[in-house]
Amino acid sequence: MYRVGYIDDEPTQFENYKRALRRRCDELELVLIEDCETKQDILNKIYEKQIDVLLIDYKMVQNYGFNGTTLINYINDSMRDIQCFIMTGVDPGQITDGLVAERDKYSKNIFDTEAADPQKEMELSAFIQVLLESAKVFQTRRQQKLERYRELLKKKKQGELGADEEEFLELYKVLSSYGMVERLPKNMLDSEFEEQLQRILEMGSAIIAEHKTE
Image (cartoon, rainbow, N blue to C red; front, side, top):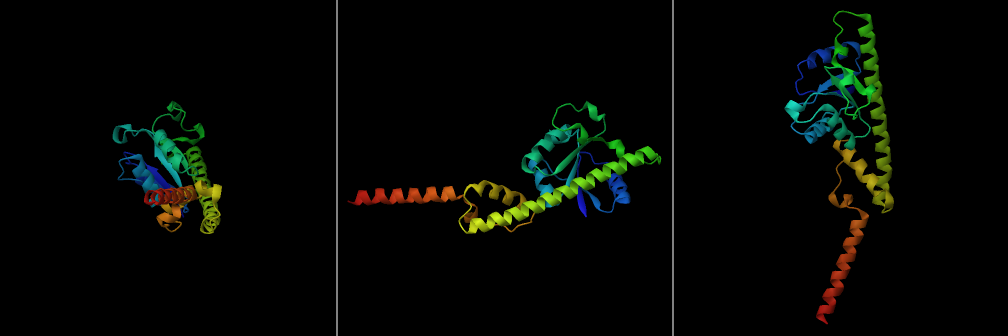
């Protein structure tokens, strides 16, 4: 099962969208991201609910203080691999801030298939396939990150991490937030550079103290 996060400051149609998705694809589950006040709150909920792909409403300034495209920019700063789609009640072409590609903007009307219009059904089916493919790609990339993390963790324990320290810490941050790796003690997360610097400072303090006693 792949989890599709749904973010909307007024999610009145959430249940309708959820049913429409469930009827057409039993591999996708629409999950409401709620009870958030800040962008960081939303990011934490994405991790907590194990989201694989995101649908985000565009107009959220009134209740959140930022719009959907700004939120996507924030999310992708921390989660580069997760695919985010803007959902809007207006013409997607009216969103012109340049933060989201045209191919990633969809009208909320795409879920409106009550009239059994074959064209609308085809468009919704195509959209669902895009969601499914995006979720699968995200999980595949996340699994690759896990394998790379395990490789770097082994090097870390052997004291051979070197220049890969930053990559290790970035992978740990993402994977631990998803609960895919166990939390490490703080001393395991300290950079080797900081440890070496601390040892040098301690040696310097010892030398100064020794000279003072002479």
